[in-house]
Amino acid sequence: MSVSVYSRTQALFLLLELRRNPGGSLKDAQKGDPKNNPILSITKLVVFPKFEKVKITRPEKFGGNLEFKNYEDLEKSFESGKLHALDLKNSVSGYLEKMIAPIRKVWK
Image (cartoon, rainbow, N blue to C red; front, side):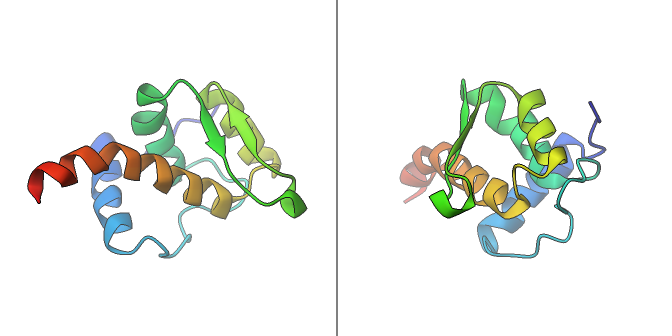
């Protein structure tokens, strides 16, 4: 398994950027390249520690939903091309939204 070079700090800064621009560029999340991929880093460092499994929601015409119980299987699927970068990004943003929602309520 490859190890992303994104640190927790870099992942947190990316989270802030994704919040400001959720439909932003995927330039750092290229298909099949797990190295230097901020979305994979966030999935590994932030999402999987909080959730027992990660569900990737996508239309049937693109293979339907995927479900992963561990990061390693998700990364393999991404590397092989079975999991597209945009599907990963969209699903991870949903998990981040679930995590941030309680904090947002307190701040309002």
